[in-house]
Length: 111
Image 1: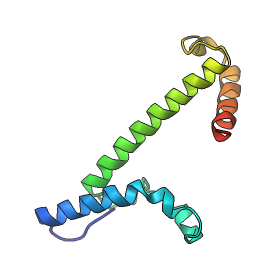
Image 2: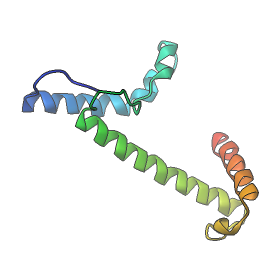
Image 3: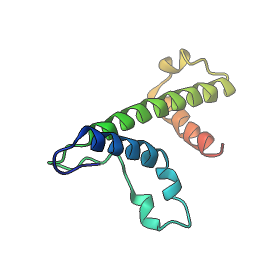
């Protein structure tokens, strides 16, 4: 999200409030009956020459960290269900790791 012109503290607060509300609900806009173009929305896209609003940058960073933690927990659960200790996962071959990851993607999609 980019803003134009000088921002007052009130405007900054309002934009930040909007970013938090809108970004948190973007997945709702990407579902029917909304226009299919909403599915193309990428809030993390970088536009050369534009500086992202600081509140949007913060939201994206926090969201990425939460997503990563959730995926890590899901992957550990996936490994446990297959009786593979998370510590042992680092000692398996690259081919096995790729196969496990493909299985994990299918597994997480089925949940």
